[in-house]
Length: 391
Ligand SMILES: *Cc1c(COP(=O)(O)O)cnc(C)c1O
Image 1 (tube, rainbow, N blue to C red):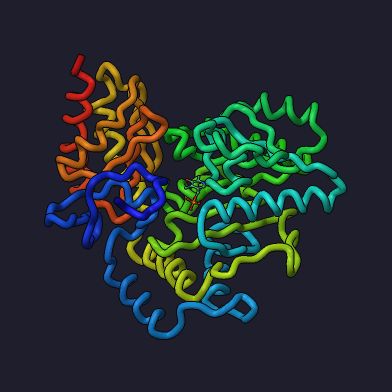
Image 2: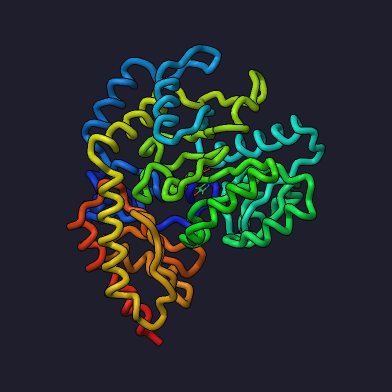
């Protein structure tokens, strides 16, 4: 009997070490990692320069308090703002914490404007985390059930539906912000229409709302740009990051620009660990290596190769509803639940994930090579074809 709290239905294997996009289990079997710990291991496993830099940092300093200056944090914030065009950064330890910061910031922004009960527009099938506020913002009954009463102050609309947002604007004077994932991850790799964000930006400007983008999963190079919204011309007021930021070392960030900047004052928000020297060095080094190794370009080209290969081999098969994605964030939607494919892939030595019941999700590390993408295609496509041919 395990003494771990029973929060995960875990697969029956454990890993001992990894290298690049490959992992080895306790029996010495090798796996191609097309999941990266759910979009976390940006640089793959055991990247030599990343490992060396972190080792050196651990030998110097792991943690001091945020009651002191933390130069590593300042360098990270400078870098994140240079890459994004944002202005201020709050550092925390995870995606839900980054979104908690965004939600608190939106409420304070509202109160500062004289809105007594600030509301935030959120989306159906959204995922923002599992703290009370972020699970309340999440659009999944499975995540919320059993934890009522939920946190109030969220108005839910369908994803990708600007008219629904315009309707809320007409009837609800208490709205202060919109929180949206540019690509929904847990929701099934669902993408926004090409002009959605630009038009949403306009609505937010007209209404004085904050446009808050949850880029916890789709940000940090995964789609071939530093941030997914950079495929459009807009700048958000708030953006949250986490997963891939520290390449496996826990760190999250909430960034502000424009009218959201300057909302928090000393004492309004904080985090004991947030942005400690080790985590900040991990994030800064991740960003530097992404630049040196041209991982954005790699994500774009290998992602396109993968998407084309999947479309060619699966696109016309009965039972495949859609193959979609951007860069190395790819979903294959089937017409029936396909959770069992995770175990079948495991037998073949391939790590994938299924989300929203019927969407195969691929989130390989950004160091994924075209050869590895070909290996992925050769392992995955026959599995899917066979699975759909049964019955
Ligand atoms: C994973 C995820 C979160 C939550 O991140 P945690 O680090 O697990 O708290 C929030 N938003 C999105 C879009 C995510 O994919």
